[in-house]
Amino acid sequence: MAGLFMRWSCAVAAVLMQAALCGPAAAGDRPYLATNSAAAEEDDDAVWSVESWLQRVGSVHTISIAPEYAFDPTTSVQFEFTRARERSTGATDQQVEVELKHLLNHIARDGYGWGIVASIQFDKAQGSGWRGGGVAIKLPFTLALWDGAGALHFNAGVAKPREARRELTWSAAIERQVIKRTTLFAEVAREGDATLLHAGVRWWLKKEKFAVDLAAQRLRAPASRDSGWVMGLGWYDL
Figure 1 (tube, rainbow, N blue to C red):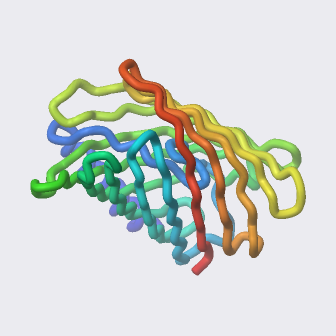
Figure 2 (cartoon, rainbow, N blue to C red):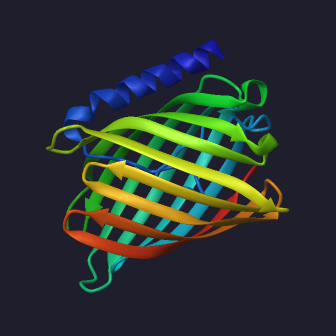
Figure 3 (cartoon, rainbow, N blue to C red):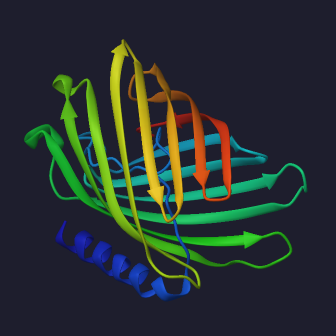
């Protein structure tokens, strides 16, 4: 375990060294778009999960797939691949994000969890090559609620856009199981001048194994107000 933590620490240091060259990255743990959970799953030991989702914001349609490997309940790495298409022009962009997460305690023991998340992002616009898009560091905190039937999440961090100054980021999210295998969730996130509002429902078709998400979202920026939807699928403990 000590050797694994040292390798993880070195990887985080490598991410931080790229900060001067890259832009922001702000992915989250599903069903959220920008918020990471700090709840350690006790059975996540050398297992894979795969999450995928479709979303539309304004005239932009996006498809993403994110495989994740959990070395143990507190340490994981995720690779997110995204392709976005602007409907009116047909222009497409691609993005790859690598995220490392390490939690510092177990929520089942303490009633809360916290940790650190580091991510690095690469972008490819239509007609150009791949280039560094950004890095971000977040500190996730999760508080268990309703005897384990829900949770409150809060993230605070910093992102470094390419060729721009660093930006402070934050997000908050809440979830609660309302009936068997059905959870409602809501999220608000802020990065730079943009605010994301996001809320929906998650159904566990097979408990802790296969989930379906359906949500609405609204992105507010100084020059635009765009609404849209998100549909997701998640496979766990593979």
